[in-house]
Image 1 (cartoon, rainbow, N blue to C red):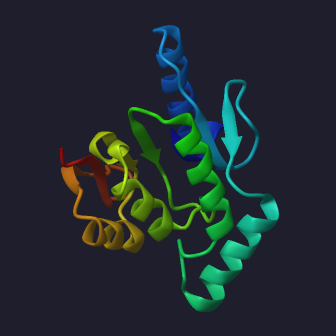
Image 2: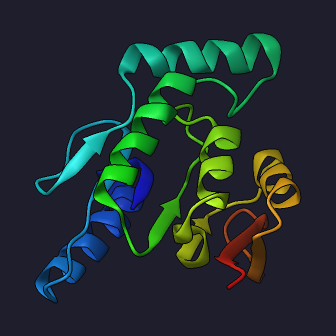
Image 3: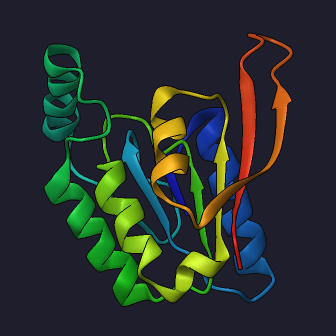
Length: 158
């Protein structure tokens, strides 16, 4: 499972799901980009300095989700070594991943058939990722009652 943080509301979604899977005798690995590590098997994607560099690249050059190439490559190596049956992505747009690199890699693997993405709110990045990766399709779209933006649930095409 990949998420921006491993704590707070979004982080708790990931860690609770991991705990449920672990309790059902499945194995899970949490990857997060910012904040504190959870008390379970996890890997930090990049560093705080890398997050700041990614933010600077986004603000100065409007290249959101195009920084953090090394951090993303390291995550890909970790995920490849772990060899998951399913990959759960949640909030991949938090200044810690290179979306193009990540989705290009996923597209080439068997895991692509079992990739599940939860994006809380739509964004330009999400639109571009869906357009560039034909193996993803919106499974459902609803409107957030708080901010009126779209909420996406995206699944891989088997």
